[in-house]
Amino acid sequence: MTEGQYKRKEAVDKEASEKEQYALQIQTLILQADIATELQESIGFSLVRGSKRHALREQPQVNYHSERCHKKTNPNTEIAALQKENKELKVQLNTQVAATQKVIHSLADAKLKLEKINQKLQDAQREKEQTSMLETQRQMNESFELSLQKDEIEKLQHKNHDFA
Image 1 (cartoon, helix red, strand yellow):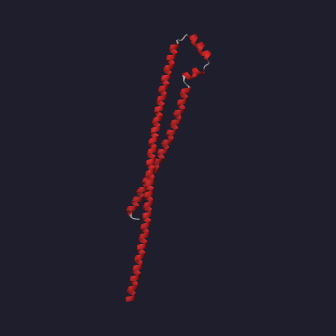
Image 2 (spheres, rainbow, N blue to C red; image 1 turned 60 degrees about the horizontal axis):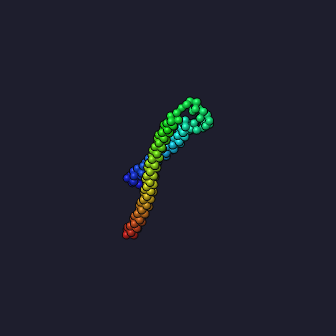
Image 3 (cartoon, rainbow, N blue to C red; image 1 turned 60 degrees about the vertical axis):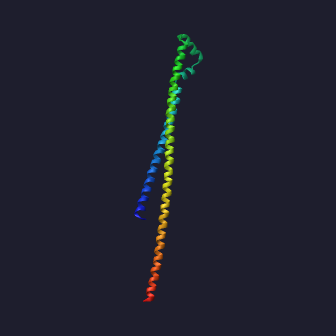
């Protein structure tokens, strides 16, 4: 193997190794994103379950009615409070949806990068195999040429020996 071919092979091997490390980093990021998404979903569900609206919904209707009559609160005030809470929950939900979409987009980007890396790895592997095949073919050709030269030398030596 010539020095240039050896350096090329080393460069291809080094590049393939770096690409494999990068692919592992991307897989780690994907797993971290999955964990973050699961955490976000569990937090989102606990926020909804812990809301005042949920607590009011679980109270018996009689108690809620008697408290309202006893406090003599304005129904419009209660409606306004519920509407305000509804808006807050919508904002929280939209924030969580935006964060989830951001995670999804980054995962999609990571997937595309991973596919490109895989393609480059496959190309490098094919190139490595072709280089190996070419080297084997070159060695076989050299061996054949040497055997031909050896045969010619022997023939010439026999001719020289016959003339002598």
